Image: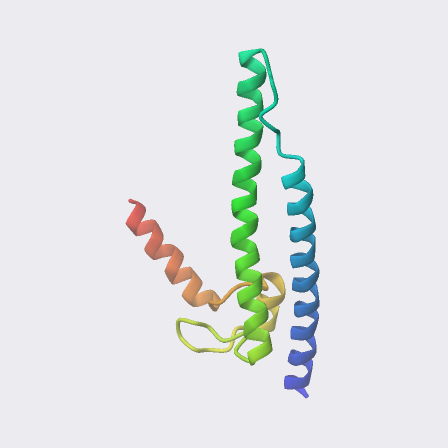
Length: 123
């Protein structure tokens, strides 16, 4: 019974990820069509302001592209039955963690270890 409940919850996660993926793609289309063009701006301030806006939008797109890759990787794992298994230790990731962070591929213990190791590298 527990396994059926987990599978049902994973299907809900899949549905949400597909909706999120679709929304990112829709937003990306809208954003790309709204990118400031290289129009004939006469004032330096306008040009600088436009470049800042353009840079911000492109950075945002990069973040969305990374999220899209994670979503696609997660959907692939759901489809091939490997979703919810920690890539570091092989343990089953609790469904509550998957619901809170659907694109995670590490259990909380391994994620904590990874973050601590990153902090040590930075210092």
